[in-house]
Length: 126
Image (cartoon, rainbow, N blue to C red; front, side, top):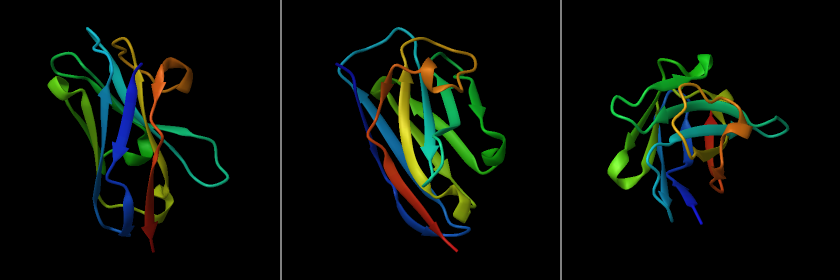
């Protein structure tokens, strides 16, 4: 059984920064993709960013977060991070970590992921 545990959410003022983390445990994978999705109140869950496990770990971002968010990973720890800078009120959402048990070049759909975390709240005040 794979468990994904997010941490690091909280309240921050607009323009501020926050880093959230997600640690995977329970199984190891020869290759995998870890991603972040978010869901704002009254909205559908949307893709934010993902990173692959292989050397070089290709990344992919939602257009609206490019240049502000950076996804990174510690492969040995099966942990993924999302550094969020220049935060805006519209970034307010519950952020979910997800893991696909295979390396994917681009994976923006929820159906491509096999495991999900419980979510962590990020609130950006104006």
